[in-house]
Length: 339
Image (cartoon, rainbow, N blue to C red; front, side, top):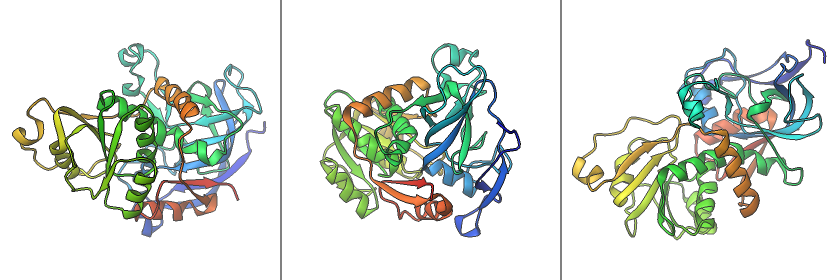
């Protein structure tokens, strides 16, 4: 392939609020894939709140003029000389975790999500808000041909991160899970919990999201600050709102766990030990995912076939999609598709 080949897409040129226009559409060189890399032609790319954090400057850019997007579905158009996992024509998923060192104590222990040298699609390397993207084949996923690309794309981050958050929350069999915030990841995680036999209560300020939660099988859907009708066995906080941490902890039953699923969170108010943590309540974070998490969730989703509530945007309107996400105008998931 000609190393001078180019692709068009969005880059974060000036991080700041969406109304300031942080994204710019431009043409950039597309290098040939390295020995372990694949070149993927993008069919669809999910829009994640992490992309918004990058665009608005909540996450410091690691690559100048980086192309966001880490929920990429497409077909392989070229492979590097050492690639064993893919062939030209295969359908591939490019996700958030883009690479690790493979030799540190965390990687050797199966905790590669904590690798100090980990790097990420759409943050450390260009992502899927473009026509084509390169990826390390060892961190990409083989995807089936049948399902629509726009329904597969959100599984690659919203679904996988939700899966890890559910594991970190340590929900007991048949237990009651509370979910705070009900966007892309939450609406998939709720279905995963229900498929496992759990009950789910949802807390969100958005009325449309509350209706969706009930449609998907939640037993209760209230405002973010509403007390639950009964104590929760576990909870996951998806909203990037630190002020909800004490609210969720107070809603837990004895021995319950709150897992905070976001990469960015506003400041957490002071906690009252007796009310929020005593009686062995646990507060823990969720950091990225391992490839084992990704494979486990994609296999689970293939069995349970979650409903993916998609709002489609042309790739050229990625800035509009992120602005809508920032203003809470997206119910379910936003997905970019080529025009």
